[in-house]
Image 1: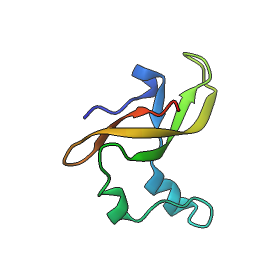
Image 2: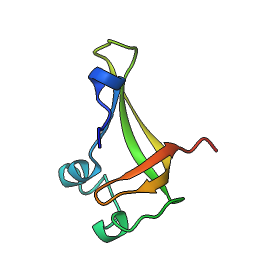
Image 3: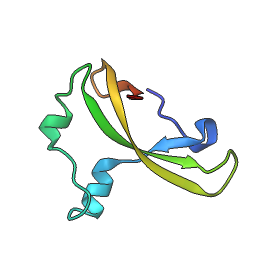
Image 4: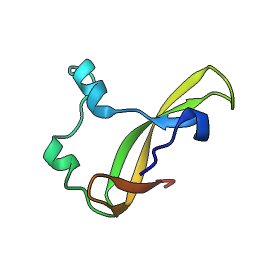
Length: 83
């Protein structure tokens, strides 16, 4: 699995577990059992950090809903939910 990077894709996914450890009172995530038992069709909210413009040092952060489209042993694949 190759995750997106600023260098290649101009965005990356933030790590919700790290954010929850750093800010436990304000950044809630579901229990690990729930996160590891998601199924195709489920919606999850991910955090995208993006360059404001390609090549910019300015970063914009957005939380977006993603629909799971495939399950793999150590990760999920999905698409943005545009509804």
